[in-house]
Image 1: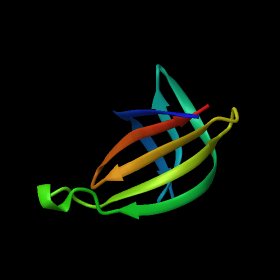
Image 2: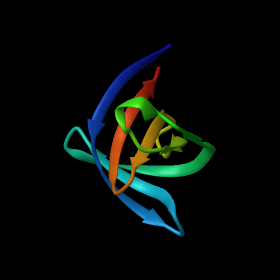
Image 3: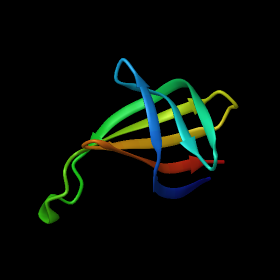
Image 4: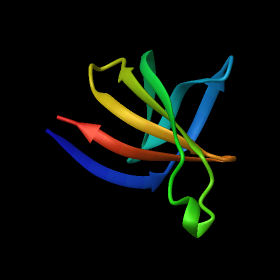
Length: 79
C-alpha cells in the first residue's frame, strides 16, 4: 500500500541524488536510490518534465520524491 502526499520538501543532494530530506519536523536519511525515472506530465498544460526517485530510507521506509525543475516534492509514502 502507498499514500500520495505530494508536498514540497527540502532535499539535500550528493552527486545529483537525494541523500536526505526534511519531512514532518525531522530529517530522513536516504540509504539507497531504488529507482529513477522521468515523467513528461501534462504537457498540454505546459507542465515540465519531472524526475522521480524511489528511495529506501535509513529507518527502512520507502518514499518517492520528484524534482520539478528546481523544486522537490515528496510524492508518495509506502507502507
